[in-house]
Image (tube, rainbow, N blue to C red):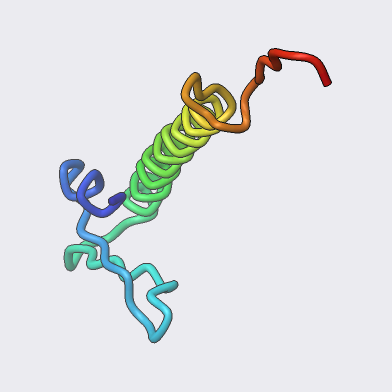
Length: 82
């Protein structure tokens, strides 16, 4: 999850709200504009990495589903007269 990656960057963040769609950031007592830029840049970088990993996983899954040598719906050979 993204908050574990952010914790590694020394940014503490949590999901809040009834639908867990609110980011709750716990800044230190001194929080300047530069700190806000750091949080946003880091969050953007980590979410972009997760999005790329998700896209890569979806691509791999679609390729695995498109080729299955053991599929019963694959090509069939017909023998005999019809």
